[in-house]
Image (tube, rainbow over all chains, first blue to last red; front, side, top):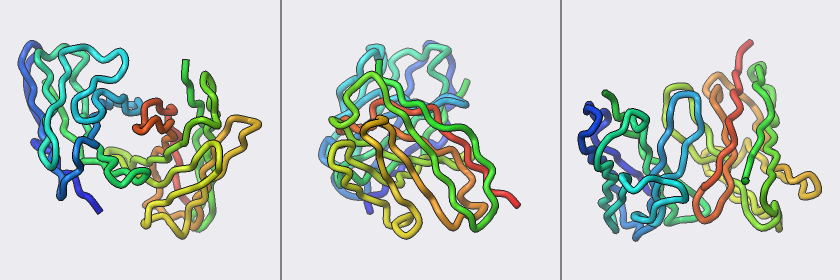
Length: 107
Length: 116
């Protein structure tokens, strides 16, 4: 099973700052990686798929990069509504999926 | 717009089974598969399985292989997740999500609490 390790576990930042979240896969997943945002009491929301493509309606301040085993989600300038938990997810062995443990972005 | 409406919260006794439903609207149910993913309170996301909306073919996580059954009713545009032999460790939110190569639209989640 492909394991995804996210770092850091918690990121403490202020509105307007840049957030950089990391996801590392235990083996290459090509570009088969997505990022999700989850707020308390809500379902996850797809932000980025295929490592770097923004999902419909996602603001341009969210960007994804990477391939193989190392991936990054960048939020260029944090808005108050961006404070949430972020998960990476791979589909290299689709339809089986695995998720990272999450990164909490807090004020 | 795409919507996935899940059934309500359940309280289930240990050893029993639970069924969670997921009614789809806003798209052609047969054209997409459905994933089932769960999340224990305060924990991360865990993939359970996948069902093809058109063919009914399924794929299960090895962890749940012996206890989970996914089905669908195309006439009702509804997918179902049955989980048996429940223990306290199965207390979690259960989500369905449409598969468009990626889980792109999610249900609101169903809280299943296992308690005597």
